[in-house]
Amino acid sequence: MPVAISNDVKITVETFYQNDKVNNTDGNHMFAYRVTIENKGEYTLKLISRHWDIVDSFSGFSEVNGEGVVGQQPILEPNEKYTYISGCALHSEFGKMSGFYTMQRQFDGKEFDVEIPEFQLIVPFKYN
Image 1 (cartoon, rainbow, N blue to C red):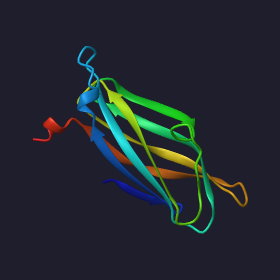
Image 2: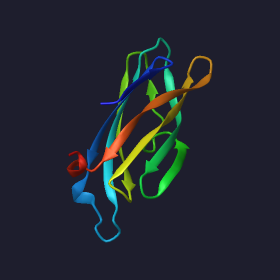
Image 3: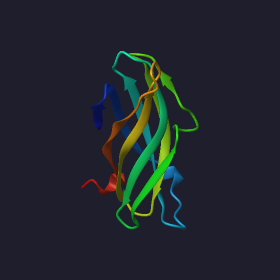
Image 4: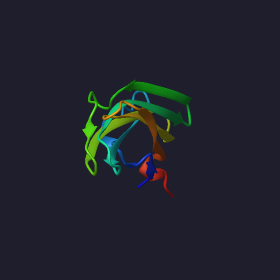
């Protein structure tokens, strides 16, 4: 599992191929990913926004920006974890994602970014 620690926040990502969600008519491949965000610091943090860099080997590079994650802006106390599941459809059997979350320290409002480690999106039968 890819892991990154930056600015006292640990991000862990686990991916799953959703073969039951494949749309054979348009060639999409659906992947799910589970992200765990852990506040390893001494201050309470709020997740403000996300930025994703997505690479699909057929359709190239795209970016996704948005408020929070899965419709939420979780607040994490020191040593607290937050886990969510989301997904990404690719036109190809190979891709990858990476990015960052913008977090806000609650006691003074300071915003900073934390790295989301790069993770691969590969259809399992291509792992030969």
